[in-house]
Amino acid sequence: MSEVSLVDRVLAGDPRAIARAITLIEDESPAGAALVRGIFARTGRAYLIGVTGPPGAGKSTLVDKLTAAIRTTGRTVGVVAVDPTSPFTGGAILGDRVRMQTHAGDAGVFIRSMATRGHLGGLAQATSEVALVFDAAGKDVVLIETVGVGQDEVDIVRTADISIVMIVPGSGDEVQALKAGIMEIADIFVVNKADREGADRAVAAIETVLSLQTFAPGEWRPPILKTEATSGKGVAELLEAIDRFRAQSASSQGTRRRARAEWRLRELMSQRFMQHVERRVLQAGEFEQVLDQIAARAVDPYSAVDSILRRAVVQPGRAEPREPLVLDHVGIAVSDLDAALAFYRDALGLDIAAAEEVASQRVRAHFIPAGDAALELLEATADDSPIAKYVSKRGPGLHHITLRVADIRRTLATLKAKGVRLIDEAPREGAHGSLVAFIHPASAHGVLVELKQAQDSGLRAQARSSSSRSEVLPEP
Ligand code: CO
Figure 1 (cartoon, protein in one colour):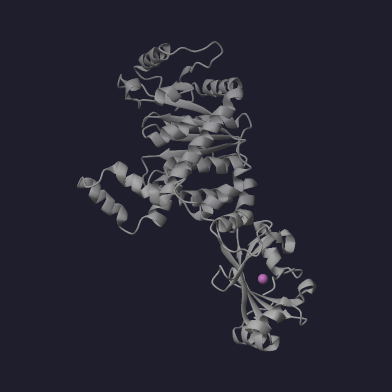
Figure 2: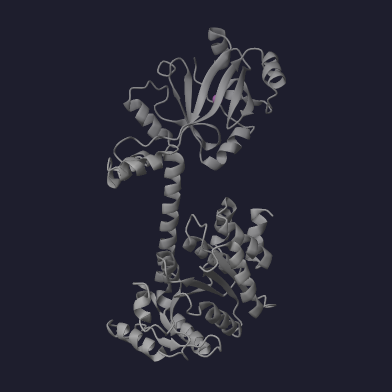
């Protein structure tokens, strides 16, 4: 299955494609990242409901009942559940089977559990990407169910469009038992298993916490709802409260989604930066060495990080950012074209593009792609051609090399400032809107160097393969 067709099939809501997409994300494969790129522009329509609470609060049951209630309104639902009780993917899949039974045969519901282990990029990151898949696949509502124990879980629920915090009566210190910070993320409190002893006490405890906060007139004050998920009691009221919040918070939804984008960007950036450091900056085993040094108090963590950072990034003001400079082609002046072709084409087996006539220069150019660069055989078509003069003066051979630069004017200015002798102090027009300038061989150790700035990168390939080049050659 190609990525392109997978994107299309996800967008079409194909359940098998959704399942495949989620697996790619869970596996943290590059194909998963490609998929997210492919679908991202088509997301942002689904309403994200985050549900969190301590283990045993009855989240799965409540989410199931809520799913059924949402379905009665005609809206489609995707559920992503983070299940800490199933550390292995097999367990999560088994959990899905049990969950799916309730909604078996309903194409409007898709449920997927996420294993909590093996997510290098972060479980919350993977969960939020699964939510994107549901969103892209046209699910109207995405339910995200997590245990509010880790910061990751809290983050993912906090950045949903609405956050529901569940509490279960029993121990008497239910509210205190909740992780610090989780109280503040609640848009709705749910006291589940409300038939149990202590339900009213739990409600009162939440009320006490809320009474310490001030709410501006018109500001949403989190309601405290009682549910019995197993019987479905209170679920309709919960859905009502969700829809009420949605209507009331419509104007602030953008802020929430921006926070979600920020969180996602920061997560991804940290992850990518660490990857860069581990793969590109540190030598094999170096990370462990630094750890040893810190353990031995030979270096402090701040100095270690400073030193790694200096190697990982170009410090502003420390050095000129290097211009990306790429070999475009090597120009070779040829006196006997048939003999040259016999070598480059027949002996080396290179493909030679059709000859290009450059009338103004009285040359014919034969372009030979070679990897990312190319060879250019230059043949004079008249005795007064610069190439004819070059060959008669120095014999056939290397005539020029062409380096592609991102900003030719800047490169010329830098070269001039460094005393490099230039044939062209200002760029002139080359082929296809490109700009070219030559550096004098006197400064380039006997080689004529042509600088070239392509009009844009997309035109490079075109310029290289085009048959209407217009080489501007300086006289030798
Ligand atoms: Co050339």
